Image (cartoon, rainbow, N blue to C red; front, side, top):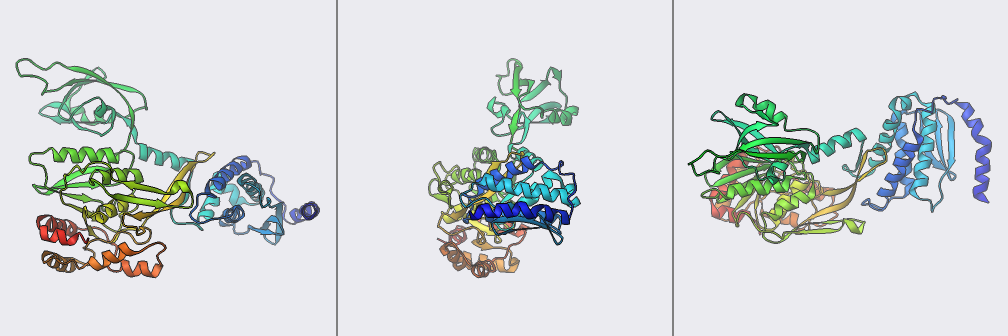
Length: 514
């Protein structure tokens, strides 16, 4: 009876309230159905997965505050069992709040009804359009979450997918050598790699047309095309002959496929026996790219006896790819674990492969821009005594997002778990404490090197303290620890320290901080 009375009252005073500020008639430009569908789907996805338990009414009101962000004259609140939209000194609309047992669809549709009325009354909202209003709903909603939960518009989602999946191509990079067009590089897990093509093979023709070194730029550009389209080559392998007769050209047809952009690069070695690999990010091809690059290095004669893994500036990416890289450097051990409210968010990642370096010493370089999946990789190697981390404190992003597509073509990223390093300490906020700190300057670094040469690590107590922390960690504790090695941008000093460690077994062992 009480709810019926509220509905009756709503019918009586709503026309009077609306008359106080006449709404513009142009509500047709706002797609209420699309907004309702998007917000309903989002609320249904977030509710069981967010790290903190949140109610549908609470999230809906947070999101509706996005209307005020576009037009400060608008206010939305919950009062007397109704969601009320106010303009300047006037009630524009009141709708019954869905009941306590209502689902996300009811709340999403109610929010869309409020937004449609606000659109009709606000030139600012009309200028923003449907997509702008949808986006602002999420901006305000996620202001109450962590820094990483977010909504991405359809255009941005498409761009991100392209960056993760890559362009449609062959995986071949051509170059000129001794007056011939030859294969310079073959991308890991690409159509060219799957067809067995190798660097050094000569390319006589492409799509039936003879090639020349003067065409290299155009030939490489022509490798990209529509996903699923084909490109043909006439290939000669100079090594596939005994020298008594010229090699026979082979016809090869490749079907273009999405190829992740390269993220693994072989850098100039620190010395003939110290290799350097740099990982700039983690996309769906990083694990294969790393295994291929490392395998090529280890096939050298002699193979490198030590490795520098440069993760400076690496902002992270696909967690599973960081796990694959760690797995290729660890014979066994826990890599990381994740914990959240949703049981599906709880996972453990363990090394199950083989150490491709056969136990060679490793130094990992990090800086203040090393984040997320890169922090997971560096912490795994350090916690398992598999590498020494050198540089500055890292960013401290230890939260994992789950992703879903929304009805408008946008994507929703929702933080649903925390990452714990192999020894149980949380990455979020703390970051990775280097076992050798370079951000305190060259003099401090040299002092650390001198101590390590005598078997003592000056950073040992800070590293041990971090590994002993457990979530939740107070802001004061985070800041006190991070002050021991402040975040900074990497410098050449990092490489000089890495060289010292990898040429001094005593210093390397002391730096491991067991």
